[in-house]
Image (cartoon, rainbow, N blue to C red; front, side, top):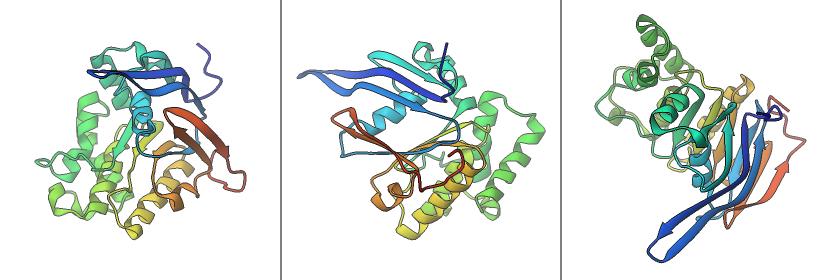
Length: 239
């Protein structure tokens, strides 16, 4: 299976939902190729299909038609159990509302993907989680519950959790949408560092000032790609 060296490959992807009022088409013949090390912003008006696109790449949702090949895996062919295992090892997903488990400490939240995918030796997992929390400047909060953290701290904890199994691909759906501008800037700078260290990033954002700083922009309108723009003057790693 040829992926032309890309880590994300969508070929003529269509997504329809069946409703009582008839079929609703959310994605229309989307073709998208993302190479390793790219940082890509996904923009567009509400309802244009941005979150559906991210969910398709993550295997959270399935295409009605077309192919979704991510990290060399045709994810549209996997069942739910296979998808969960594949996702845990290959894709780190970061959501707007953090989705940390409230009854687990911060360090336990970060360890959870390692436990689920049986990655790393049991005695190594806490040390790795602590190292990741140090990377996002949260090591002093490791034993706290998520509710004791600010929104920005919870998002950084969610990023540490997304990095737990060292996935090559990070998918972020409005990761700064619930944060003030100063905190959002800190999260964005962390993403820059991760891309410069070799990660691939796709980030849905409504924040035009942040989107303007990304080296590539994909714009969706009515479920179709209306713009695919590379910015030559923005020199993140991988360009």
